[in-house]
Image 1 (cartoon, rainbow, N blue to C red):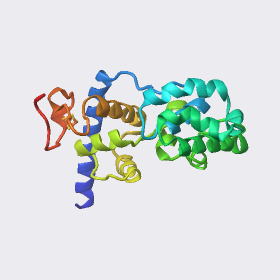
Image 2: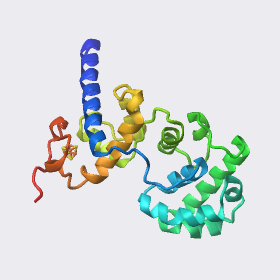
Image 3: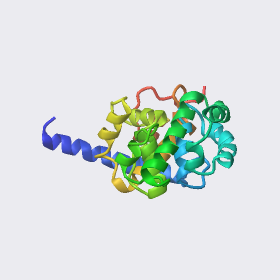
Length: 224
Ligand code: SF4
């Protein structure tokens, strides 16, 4: 494709993104994460625990965890075996316990116990990857954030917005076509849509509010 055709195609995708977002906004007016938290430290910890598990499973362990370790300093100094026991239900508990305690230590040692806003600073914390950093930046600081998880990747591929499967490549491919002011809302709503309607094995295309905007060629147009 030459530059002009590339630009035209990008404009088509930007329009598709805006319309998808407009419709999903009506279905999912709220964009708040389903993880329970009361401050930045709690959000960051909960997001790290949410890898490979459900928000409900994280919410089932965090109240006790945050009662026992109410701030980064107390978690940084925690006994690792005790933390492992407390987060066991979220799966991969050994690495998660290690990551949340190391991240708490990083917050104390590098940032005075506060969650930093800059992407590079968040990524400098052990256990914090791009997805976690974007959730925190979008949720706590209202920054543009493309949050790529398994649901977001699947839905955006089906919508023809990207052909990539690697999360960082998906983020880079979508950055130019999702206007910055809707990046966080778009990410959250596409995520909700992936869980609620556009599931991996049985997408409910017959009741999908963006079906006419979706070029996916294996749509399921009936419930059976
Ligand atoms: S039409 Fe089907 S595949 Fe496309 S977004 Fe909707 S549920 Fe997903």
